[in-house]
Image (cartoon, rainbow, N blue to C red; front, top):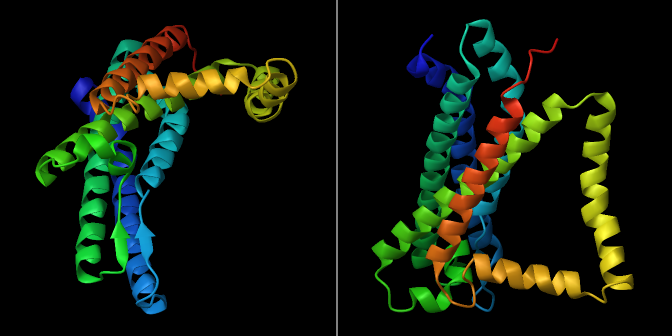
Length: 251
């Protein structure tokens, strides 16, 4: 089994999942429009936005759960770990491209709905975060930049999900429990308490400033975010490769 065949195997299950997800998200958008038309009146407005978040959650879960089955099957077919990793990354790139395209299609649908129904407002993550950047910009260029941002965002998210999945696979039972419980507890309980009681909120302020810088929000420069997210994907990919190099097939 060569790289092309490995890639086809990786994408085999993904194709159906991507198709079903795409149909559901488009149908949900149309139903949301129908509901907004039915329930709205001249004195109220409805804003449809943030549908991209669903794609981000979807691809994170896909990355989180993709390692074990693919690793077992491809290892049994004498594919090297390097081949498995390469095929998986190509699959992630393809899936990110598909989901980014779906996000753009959904945005176009919501904008068409807004044109048909004046009391419906269509917005996107890109337009919300970078309002000054898009001011006076051509709509086609806005969509192209939106696609590019969503694409690298999907890559970064799926890369992080995959890294967590590989680490989880390598751990023993105690380690898996510690990871599954420790991460949520740390971020939802320990970190907020320590920040408030010891650092007087400075950790939160620092994190907000850091996110502002790497996403280019104050600078209103989405290309800063694009580069930052691409770096996140490359780092998570490198760490995933380092983690999986000596992984063995487990029952």
